[in-house]
Image 1 (cartoon, rainbow, N blue to C red):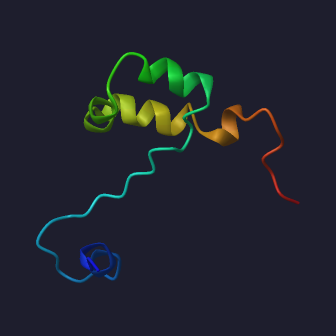
Image 2: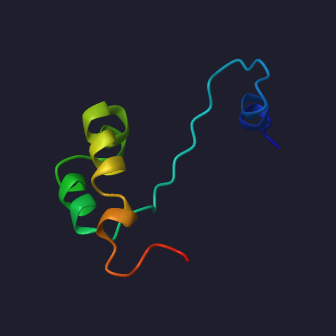
Image 3: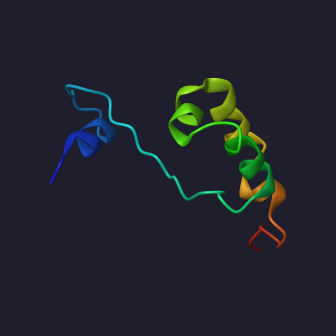
Amino acid sequence: MNTRFLDACWGKPVDRVPVWLMRQAGRYLPDYMRVRSKCTFLELCKTPELAAEVTIRCSPNRSAPWPTSRR
């Protein structure tokens, strides 16, 4: 098992900063598909403006066709 991620989570020194990607999140949302149609997934990840756009504007809580609050 690779412990780099867990070590970083616990604040231990690591040789490289690990990155966790959730690739499937939002892939069905129209706003996300619009952004993704203009670039590859890797380009999306490496471009701060695009990554911020899909993180903020394309979040399921902003555009889901169903209620997202739990009461």
